[in-house]
Image (cartoon, rainbow, N blue to C red; front, side, top):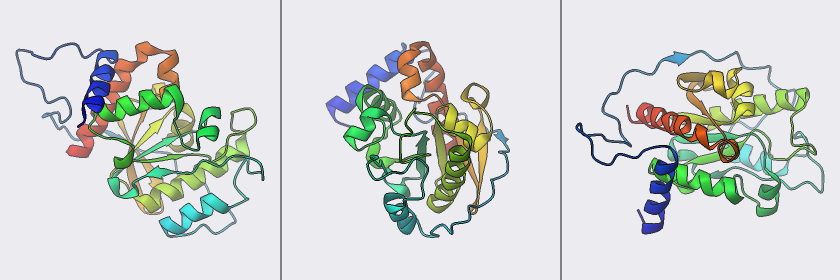
Length: 237
């Protein structure tokens, strides 16, 4: 880990309330020793497949996301922000839709929220090259919200996407992905394991707060850190 990455991780731990480096008992913060079996809560059934046949290979589906004009909120002038990172990393993270600054930067979770996200990744020994980051929608809607038809389509596409990637675990960042794929808001979904139904089977998932929410509610960083620990404990188990 570089000096900058280490400093970033330390800053995140400080924000999350980790203020003890030496304790009476040893702690492995990134790989907790107590590896109780995750308590998995079943997810709602997957919605019906859309009329359009979706590509059944990840590379073809990624190309479809880059080119299709049938996606929700698609228009010739709308910026399209596609997934990034390593699909083979074993860890997929899903946010809702590109923020305004993401549309300008051409990457998900940019700006101040992106810098916080990078610190969160560093705290668990990851970076953007060792996760796969996607959003429910490649486009930002005019009002930054999902209407019912768009939410239904994006939920179906996300399940198909997850099934093609087949990660070891999924981290859902924020209310919209949590509601779309688990049927619960973040506050009710976080703190335990769930399963997302896909054509490839059940995929384990954890829900947590979006970085943009943590910027507005710094007091939630401790809970977000607990979610990250739960995620890594399950992946290392």
